[in-house]
Length: 438
Image 1 (cartoon, rainbow, N blue to C red):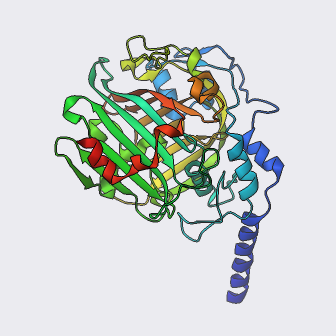
Image 2 (cartoon, one colour):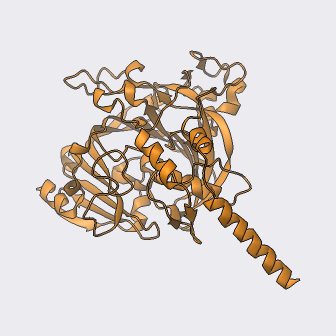
Image 3 (spheres, rainbow, N blue to C red):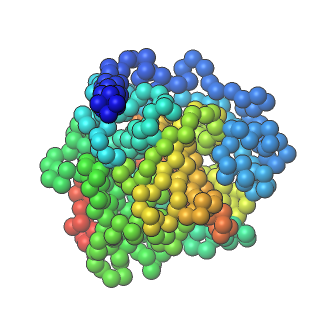
C-alpha cells in the first residue's frame, strides 16, 4: 500500500509538472490579453451611464466587492457605470509572452520560479483545482506591465483627510520613479539594463518636495530577481541628512503618517514569498477603469502648462475619486501574510484579468474584520497625457485608501508619465539619496 501511494504521488507530481510546461497556444494567450474581443460582460439591469446608489445597490450587490457595496449602501458614495473597454497592453509585452511562456514553472517553495524571461508567466486561465493558482496569478502581477519598463509620477499630491468632516489634515507633495532592470520588453535597453551587479529586478524611488518639515525625505526600494531575498529599502530623512536601512517590519508601518504602509504601494509592494496566495474564483465586477480626459477634474488642484488637471474627489469626506466603473473580468485572490506578527490577517485582491493591475483591494485586520479599502483608478493611456498614448500602460490615476474603522482616508492625485528619460538608472542608487538630499 505504501509503495502504491508513493507511485500515485509521483505520477500526480509528474502530471502537475507536465501541465506546467505544456506548450501554451495562441488561443490561450489571446484570451488572456484580449478578453473583450468578441463580447463584454453583462449583468441584468446594469446599463452604461446609470448611477448605482443607496436606492438600487441591492440589485447590483453581486458585481460589487464587499467594501464598495458597504460604502454605497451607507450613502457614503455612488458610482457611475462606464462602458467596458479594452486596455490593450503594449504589443512587445504580448509578444514576449508568446515567445517565453512555454516551460515556465513554479519552484518547490513559494517565491521560486523557473525559466521566465519576460512577458506574462502564466497566461492560462486559473483553476480552483490548482492549489497554486493564486501564486501563479501573483507572479503575473509582479511581472506585469504596470508602469511599463519605466515611468515617473510628478507631481504626486497625497492628502490626509478626516472622513467625518472632509477636513484635509495634511498635504504632501512628492515624486515617484519606477524602473525595471530586467524583463524589459518595449524600452531600450532590452531585455535588461547592464551592468546589474546586485541582480535587481525592479526599483522604486520617492522624494518629498513639500511641506518643509518633510522636504528631501526619500525612499529607495531595491527588489531582487530572487524573490526569496529580502528587499533592500533605504530612507533618507531630510532633517537628519543621513541614510538608514529600513527593516522588513518598517514596511508595514503607517508611512509618513498616512493610511498606507509601504507594502500597500501599487496594491501590493512586497515579495511573493511573503504571502500565502489563494485563488478564490473569477467574477465580473465593477472596477474603476475610465478615460482620464472625460472625468471631472479638481479645479483647485494642480494644473500644468498644457492644461492637464487631476481627478476630482467627492462622496463622504471627499474620499472617493469621481470616476466611472466598468464591469470587468477579475480574479479574486486572497493573500495571507506568512509573518504571524503582520498587522493584517489578509488582503483580498480583485485583479483585473486583462491588465493584471490591482484596482480594488480590501484589507482585514488581525481579528479578521474589514479594516481598509484601497482603490487604484485606471485611466486608458490613449485618453490621458499625449506622451502616454500608445504606451499600452494602464495608468494609475486616482488613488484612495480608506480606513473604515477610523473614518479616515488618504487620497492621491497625480500626473503619471510613461517616459524612460525621466528615470535614469543612477536615480535608483544610495549615492543619489545623499546627493539629492543636500
